[in-house]
Every structure is written in C-alpha cells, then in structure tokens.
Image 1: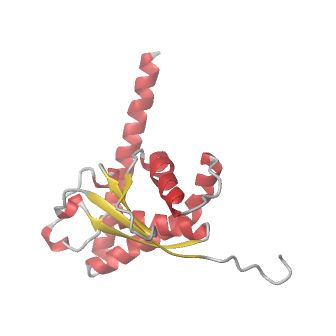
Image 2: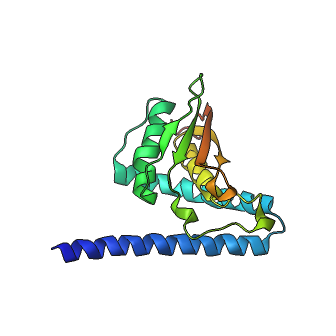
Length: 180
C-alpha cells in the first residue's frame, strides 16, 4: 500500500518539476523574443490574464466555493483554496490596508522559481508575473476589478515573495437588451 502512495507522491513531484521547467522555457523564449524586460513582464501578465479567465470556471466547478461576500473572504479563498489547488502552496494573507481594499499574499515558497536564477541583465524581469495576470483575469470573471503586482520577490534579492492585491471596483454585468 505504501508503494502506491509513494508513486502518487513521485508523480506529483515530477508534474510540478515539469511545470516549473516548462514555465522556465517559456520565460526564456519570451526574453529572446522581446527587447526588454518590461515587454516580457507585459506578455507574462497578458498570458496569465488569459489563463485566469478560463481557469476560474475550473476552479468554481472543482472547489464548490460559493460567491464571496467581501474582499477579505475572497483573499482567504485565493490563499487557502486556489493556490493550494493549483500550485500546492498556501500563502499567508497579511498587510491589510485600513480601508480593507488592499492586502498582501506572502509566498513562503514559489514553485515557479525552483531551479531559477535571474541573470544580471534581467534585473527588472518579474519572472512570476504570470501569477498576477491569472489572479486579475480570474477575479474579473467574477466581477471584481483588481490591481495585482509583485511587491517583493526572492529572485530579486528580497527576503520574501509578496504579491500585492488592490480592489479597484465591482464590475457590473452588462446584459444585452432583452436578456435580463
């Protein structure tokens, strides 16, 4: 019986490593295709946004999470359910703004950066910027406009990896005339 559980663990680890290496190849190719890090950052965000727009349906179906009542509940669901489900990590939710419209996700470990060192000539590259786009795209599909950015990153020499999220506004659904 333990042999079977070891295979499952090994399989998950191999899948995670394959994902990490594939993502690294993607970022490397983007760095070759675009002139500067800012353009690569934009492309990673755009790709992440497109993933998030589609991923939210899978998340809602698999997690059976209902509609969140406020931004604090949304933050908890993102950290405790979504990150756990898709990346196998549970970031902590901290640094709430006094207005309750902004918070930080602190990642103890970021699986996207395993095996990664940024070269000196890519000091402004936000290597994991895909995550910001995923969060922005997914939340937009549930009528929340947010600003998402990396505030700190261990790849850039910071002590922690911090994603900062700010609630901008609730998006009103615009139904075509007659579809109300």
